[in-house]
Length: 402
Image (cartoon, rainbow, N blue to C red; front, side):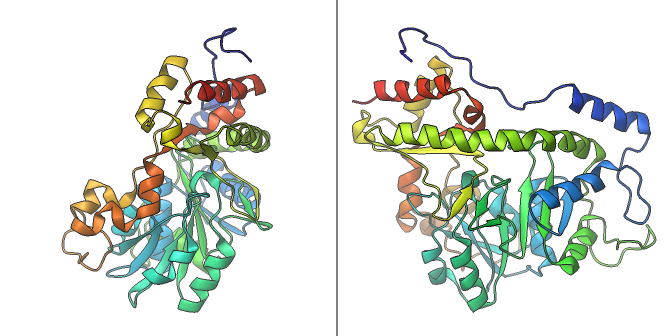
């Protein structure tokens, strides 16, 4: 459509909800069962139902629901025996939780650069980061785009490494016939307010290893074991349980998700075809072998010289005037103040990390540093928009070309 015909368009808002979420919360309150209880002595029913339904949706035999996506990673790492002094390889282009969860276990994250087209961990750079201290890898499926998990798992098997997939962006993503979260030893998910499946907060861990699932449950529920007396505590654990309120909302959101998921994938292809046809723009490329993406974010890499040497904030200021939704990109982890200044856990030796001080210089992470400086990003709700609205974005971007 012509911009002259209509200068502003109202894009979809997030979250999408109706009276069913409200009624689900009222039902929890009226039930008087405000927490899930334990497997042997259940109280509420929503957490247990959500675990079963989400695990089934993701194609996994076990699901442990927790309070948020950050602690989901922590629990998975702890259950796999990751701890003091161990090194864990993490993508450098992700939300801080992918690495802060490693810090929380007293282990050391090691940052891996990314592929410039798919924007996810470059598996070809993993082996050069492995040392005798390396115990695990956390591949992050940024924007729902899968890491090359078949290649990554071959490396993990060769070096006897554990794999925790960070699927916070990747609900429903499928790579080479298998849903993400099922390639590694465990997969973790977030249901934070902006996620494609949300209850404001919430998290889950999936695994096809029932013994590992039992350990993760025990860690997340104060060291309790399933079907044992409630005041017996067998190992160190803490309270990371999901609440009945979160699960009640998620059970309703799960019903809406399949239609939204299909629409996001359809619209992402349509928008990518449009934007990739504009010289100087390149939408995030799905990893070869990807069948479906979660599309939590929609990143677009641009060539500055074709857009007046704009910085991302230049684009965003113009989007604000046109009421086009946008989402700033994550800063590469190596340059965050907490890592650059090594302001982390006291008493832990981080001297062997590939970051901190001069090691955090961008020149050591060339791809992600370059990509960050020339990437604009849209939130997933634009992929619930109409064709007219998607055309509006493409047409507006054309007007910004120099």
